[in-house]
Structure formats: structure tokens, C-alpha cells
Amino acid sequence: MQNKIGYKIIISGGGTGGHIFPAVAIANQIMSTYPDSEILFVGAEGRMEMHRVPEAGYKIIGLPIVGIQRKSILKNLIVPFKIWKSIYLAKKIIKEFKPDVAIGVGGYASWPLLYSASSLGVPTVIQEQNSYAGVANKNLSKKAELICVAYDGMEKFFPKQKIKLTGNPVRSAITATLPDKKNAAATFGLSDSKPTILVIGGSLGARTINEAIAQDIPFWKEKGVQLLWQTGKGYYASYRHLHQDGIIVCEFIQNMDQAYAIADIIISRAGALSIAELSIVAKPMILVPSPNVAEDHQTKNAQALVSKKAAIMVRDVDAATNLTTSAWELLQDKNKQALLVNELKALGKPDATATIVEHIMDLIKKK
Image 1 (spheres, one colour):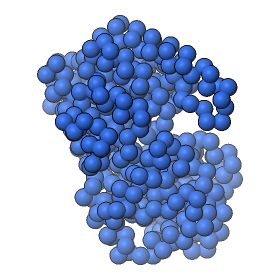
Image 2 (cartoon, one colour):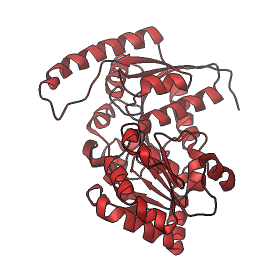
Image 3 (tube, one colour):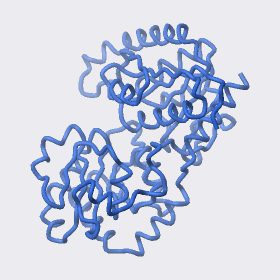
């Protein structure tokens, strides 16, 4: 149901698809329910959101915020200046836009924007996607009015009275009812009668997953198994030559619902967005957590599913030796697949986006 009342809302964050897609999902839900609203995104200059958000039809302003550079001490000398400048610009944006609420979805730009909003008396909302909260969100939670989480037990990071267990927002095209498998197979030039593995290493790609897949393509060809393989932007040039009949190599898959429809099993990083989507579509999955993320949160995300017998995990360091073996064993074991799917269905929260927006609107109305 649409409401004629409109609100002014800032959404901040980004850096990867795992932050951007939930942010856009929240924005779309707000505009669907409150079409007279005005939404402004705030991102980090030079990051993926500066392209993806306008593609989704929203205005975005970039801040010069950057993260700590582990490999370059010299570059870190400018970080305090960029933080100060980002806070100054964020306060200016807030004073000019006059939002009813500021929402942070994670990523570089969330911290200066939410910090500035709180200091100016604007209600703030944290949408924490992972099972392990980072330092920035733990700090921001002290002044946030609402914290939407996707995992149980988050009171060890945040004030319990502010937490709402909502699940993670996913793209509107991702639902429990997937497209027709035959049509989906035709979309990618694959057969709907052969076993198919979907490989997704995130929007930027995953080096170890790509290497493990590339080295064992002869094995999959011999077994008659098809691969639908998203390499990610940073790796496509290195692997595009492996594209052939039954081995589809893509930089990025736009129509993800079609990809999920054709997959018998899925190999994926353990980002929060990936897990949220995979829990809804309920396909057997092998998670290979990235070790190159803050607080090793992907391993903790994966372990949260493994502990409930909803997924299989292969450590990144073991991918070269164990990933193909694990995938082949799972592909052959229909009972194991059924058990994983059953547990995943219990975890999926297809109404997460609508629930988050309901809580945000309740907050605005109270304020």
C-alpha cells in the first residue's frame, strides 16, 4: 500500500556490492511504499557505489573518506585529514538536505555520515549485515536509535534494547520462487539436463576460488558438469579464455535470479548479501570465506550457517586442494543437498527489506 506522506532520507555506505545492493533494496522499498519521499545516498569517492547507485536511479554524493592502508604507512598520513574533511562535508550535506533519518549500511562512508548526523540531532539507523560487528558500527551504536541485524546474539556488540532481528535486505528479483530452469539455462547457453555449479566470488571477485576452478576445469568437463562462473571484475581478463561449451565465464552476472534457477549447487564467498540471497533461494552451497576482510567476519558468517547444518565451509587456504572434492561430493549426495536446503529455508527472511523499512518509519514517526 502506498502512502502519500513523503520523507527525506539519507543512506550512506558502500564499497562492495554487499553494501550497495542492500542499500538500494531499502531505498526501493521506501519509494514503493512512500513514493513522495526523497532519498539521497552518500558514498566514498572512487568506490563502486558512485556508479551503481546512479544506475539504480538515485542521486549520490561522494566523500573523500578512505580506509587504513595496510601496505603503505605513507598513505596513512593523509587518513586523519580525509576523515576530518569527510565529517565537515557530511555535516554540510545534512544541514542542506535536512533528513528525517540517516541510515548506515556499512562501508567507508557510513561512519562520517552517521557520526555527523548524530551530532546534529538526526536519528540514525545501523543496518548490520554480518554476524560479527566491526569497530565503526560498535562505536556508532552508542548514539544510534535503531540497529537492524541479521543474526542472533548481536547483543554482545550492541545495546540490546536497540536491536531488531530483521534479516538482510536482498534485491527484489530474488525470491523463493525462481524462474523456469529451462528458460534460465537458455539465457546462459547451457543445458537444463546437465548438473550445473554456480560459482560467485562476489562483485569484485575471489582469487583463490577462481584459481581452484580454473585448475580443475578438465575434471568438470570429464564429469559432464557445467559451470556458470562469475570471476569478478578484477579477474575476468585472466580467465575469459576458458569460456567454452558448458563452461560459461562472466565478469558479472546481472540476472542473478536466472543464475540461481539453473544451479544445482553454489560455490560462494560468505558475504552477508550472498548468504541472505542464498538462504532465500535455498540452494545447497559451499562457502569459501574471504580472509581479507575486517575482523574475519566472513568466516564468522559461514560458521553461523555451518553450526546450523545449513552450509558447507571450505577455508580459503584449503580451496586449491579441497574445493573441487567438496563440490563433487555434494553434487553426488542428494540426501546431503536436501538436508542443507531444509535448514536454509528455516533461516531465509524474504520479508527483511519491508520489515527494516517498517522499523525505520516507526522511528521517524516517533521522532
